[in-house]
Image (tube, rainbow, N blue to C red; front, side):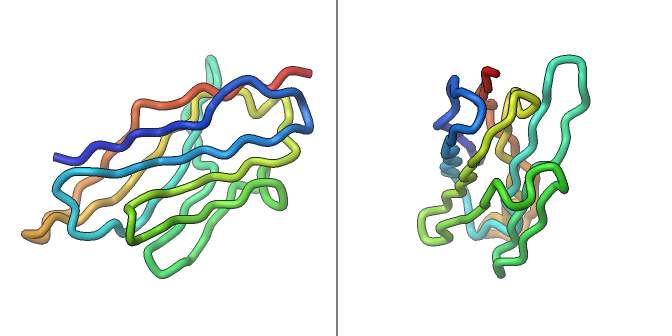
Length: 120
């Protein structure tokens, strides 16, 4: 089994910054893609950013230039640096990972989510 644990959420004023972390543990051989999604009340979960093991990065248009995704492959940890936060960024942020186990099985995992609230 694999566990993803997010941290770093909280309450911040508009224009402020937060840094989210996602620590993966368990039966991990390698992590293919790590991503961050968010879900605001009454809305569907949406992709915020994703990064592959090779460093290819994809951002939602709404966060380009303000958010930066990164990862530490040696520690199976991902990060999301969020700058210039806006009130519409208020949501539960979820870490997602495509994980290969030692026997070559690939599975998707989600973290429990961390609340980010941006006040105006």
